[in-house]
Length: 406
Ligand SMILES: Cc1ncc(COP(=O)(O)O)c(C=O)c1O
Image 1 (cartoon, rainbow, N blue to C red):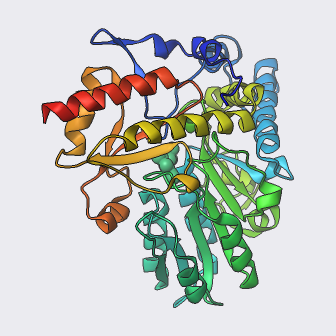
Image 2: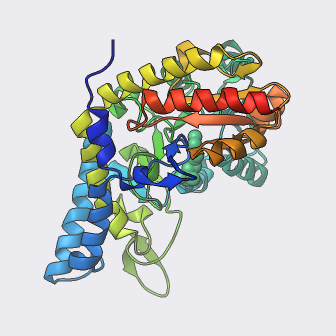
């Protein structure tokens, strides 16, 4: 059964979708890298610089108060969107990458020699390197949860390595290279037995499935606004109040202080303690419109529609000889990674580009999983709410054509 969402109407909100490339309408299948932006988000940024521009939390004048109020409303909106308990648990960063780096630095005081941090094999580089560096600095051990050929975590192995030495587990909600949904509830359940902190990287989940922080109950949850129809340069770190309160800041400067003398400084309360310097105010304000866009359609409807799109794509691609699709269908969200026998993924990406189809090729910032699969990379198509069945059929026909060329 097809969902009742009016995709034609939704597409009209995205001016970039009218782009023509080599006489073909742009087909944008790289939404895992960044989604396109609706008019309301674009106009909100223009409106900020045209009518509100001023610095936040500083001035006693009209514009600054307005910018500050709207920024705090954006924080409130994010809090409600993910159902966090308090808005001061929402920290603005520059992206998921900075959110993870913030935690890796801020909680470093909890990590001692021979302690352990656990991550899965299938992570984005931004959820590998900060932990690698932290472990090196503290002479701690980075332990890796292996995966099977479908990209699923080996859960029994995870249970065998977690112990009282495990200070933190960090994993993606949905992997960016293969689109595998990780068993985060089960991981958090195990972690709590050992008092282990858990960070969930929700970058590939936030605009595709409903997120209920109080139900998931992680210690930290991070994501980037540009992957949810909002602007680049804004990220979110959700952190539990009690942990954020006792963790030291990660960046120092204006905005994050209480009292400063040449002898010492005391810090502001959360969230401001973690928000040194002037933020991307226009971007933060336009986040309100990105969330309103998702809310209007309803994230549950987005999931239903995107699952239909995924199933249709898998059906078509599976009918082509020589195609290898990675990951398992029952455990997939909005991303399909595949290869075609004897053709380099980059060549396929270039040829698809000639038809106006934007796909991602390469290792998707996840080199370890590519090494595990013994492949140089994949062709990754990733969907958003504005993608259509017609686009997928067009793409499928072009894949058949490319196969004939080789
Ligand atoms: C799972 C995952 N984590 C982290 C990131 C990093 O996001 P950003 O570059 O917006 O900081 C990405 C980006 O693709 C991602 O897919």
